[in-house]
Image 1 (cartoon, rainbow, N blue to C red):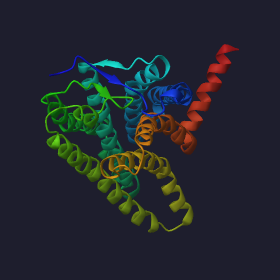
Image 2: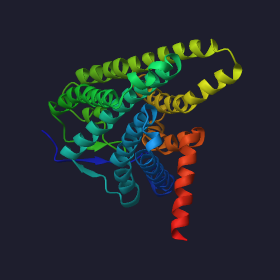
Image 3: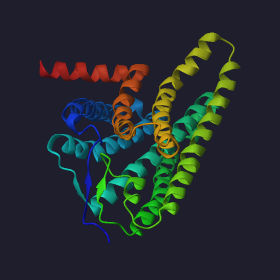
Image 4: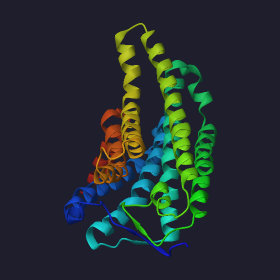
Length: 310
């Protein structure tokens, strides 16, 4: 049996607070949309920002826009209008996009760490090594890798036989949330989900850690404190985004699988909901505040727009 529709309930146990919960989520979603669109427009329009670091940042911005837009509008429909019905196909598509974007973002963060490694440890080869064609190939590889990792998981969900229960205690569809409604064994799904998380995101974290280990070694070998400070300042924004991306993801993943009943279900779901909107909202702010070139470009664009109105 395969149900025609599933029913998303929002945040289980907090249904009476859905309206109040929706207000900060709506505000964060609007900020995420505006911030990422402004950042993307700035990078595309300003020729001086057509550098490897900013091209990778634009890819991260597109991924953030897709992640928040894939989840938050449906979430708000549940909070505001109690419209939790979602077709089987739409639920599968949403689960695919969420996991696909997560794996792609992780790969982009690895590429950004490699960019910083080349810029600091091998600056003379930076322009010749990270050309536009190389950057496009790296981003294409990230997309193909994400597709190859996520598609088997979706196939495992499609092969299951489902019971009459069609209620998903979540605000959006994800792999294990759908699989738990099956009547047949989901052991393969659970093993695959755990393996993918540890091998894809785990290996990405190792690569990032190695890159920054080499960066720190190169920075500490610089002769002056000013040069060391300047080198590390170019990495600050990226380190903040890495922390913001992986910490809640791994916390939610491992507590969900190994935390058992120690953490209430509504806390798990609330953290999962925050994860798809808080990083996309904060990433443009982090880069806008810490990156002088982006900050000055945005300010000059705003002043130009103001002068055109006058």
